Each structure stands twice: as structure tokens, then as C-alpha cells.
Amino acid sequence: MTNRAIDNLEGHLEELLSKHRSSVVAQTMVPDYRKDRDPEESSRHFVDLERYGEFPFSLLELDYGQLVGQLGEETVQRNGTGLWAAHGTFNRLVEAFQRRDLEQILLYGSDLSHYVADLHQPFHTTENFDGQLTGQVGLHARFESDLVNFNLDQIHFSESAPTDLGQVQPTLYDIVLESHQWVEKILLADRRIVSELGIDRKQYPDQYFSLLFDQVGTVVEERLNQAAYRVGSLWWMAWERAGQPDF
View 1 (cartoon, helix red, strand yellow):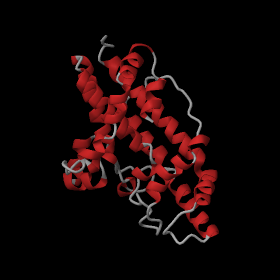
View 2 (cartoon, rainbow, N blue to C red):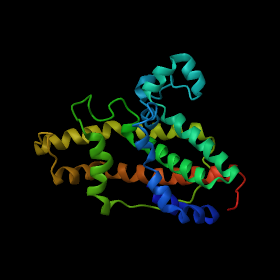
View 3 (cartoon, helix red, strand yellow):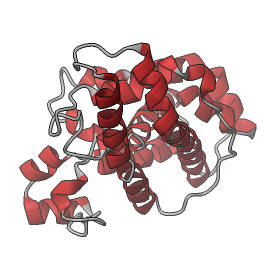
View 4 (spheres, rainbow, N blue to C red):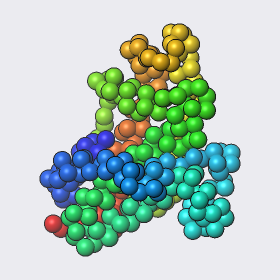
């Protein structure tokens, strides 16, 4: 997805990140590796929307300080801080551009790509993050990795030039709402196919992934393309807000 986001860029920013493409793509996985040494890192990859009431989750205060004041730091961390991790990383990227600090630009650009991509994954927005609450354990990886890899040649990747998305935090909130609306559709498709094929949930045949893609392939394609577009746009916005520095 990070590769696609770079491809969406234009002009000087595209030249800069394309020149360092291998580093940006490789560093995109670093937030996952930080989980082993940073006890707060895991929380930065998700937000369990159901813990903030019914849709549209009106108990979720976008101001992090106010939310912590209402619920306490421990509760907010347990519920997931993905929205604020992405926003904070965006602000740090702006500052890195202002300083023309290439090392930090690549680091925060990669982190931002990871966090924003996570928010586009439906199972990063729900308490039922792995299907564990509905007897569908492993669905997170089946949808995010196995389904994509099995059907990669059928996924259409489109190019979308970056645009100004407006205020960052409300935009991130809209993204998680978009993602969350697909959770039940994916859960239902999995249950239906498992029942149809008589799968024992210990091993999933190729036919499972073919049928699942028939039912939710459009969701996969839409989330991947939207993630690439939003990441590219947020990179571009950070560069623009820093005054479009030349390197």
C-alpha cells in the first residue's frame, strides 16, 4: 500500500519519496516491531468504536485530553489510540519537513502510512478484532493478508492524485467510521462460506478464499485504494503545511 501511495504523488514530493522508496516501504513495518519494547505501541494501531456507544459513537471525544479527562488514561489506552497516533505522527511529519530533516521525514512518513492504513482495516475498529467474540478466530489475518495474497491478481489499484483532506482529526474519524461499516458484512460472509463448505475452522481451503473474495473483494479493493490515496494526501498536506520545502 505504501508503494501505491508513493505512486499517487506528483512533482517534488514524488521525486523525494521515490528516491527513498525502499527505505520508506521497509520502515512502514517498524511500528509493529516497536510493540515488543514499547508497552503503549499496540494501542496506537486500533480504536474499538463500540466502547463509545452506538453508531455514530457519540461518546468518542476527538480531543484526546478531554477524552482522558472523562474516562482516564488507562481506559482510553485500552480502547485504542489509533486516531490520535496518526494525528500526532502527521504533526511530527510537518515539523520534520520544516526542519528539512530527511531521516525524520522518512521515519514519520513511514509511521503515518502504517497508522493510517491500519485505520482503513475494518478489524482495527472493533472489539471483535479477530472474530474471537463470534467464534470466527483468525478472521483478521484471513481478511487482511491471506485473502489479499490469494487474490492479488484480481485487485485493481487505481491512481489518485493527492488532495487537501481538510482538518486531519475529523478526517481520520471519518476513515474509521467508513471502515467499521464493513465489519458485519465480512463476518457474515465468513460464516456463510464456512457453513456452505463445512469447514472445521482448523484449515481453510483455496475455495474459501475464492468465495470470500467474491463477496467482499470490493471491500478489500476499496479500502486498499482509499488507504493509498489518504496516505499520499496526508504526506502532501504535511509537506504543503511546512511550506513546500525543497530538498
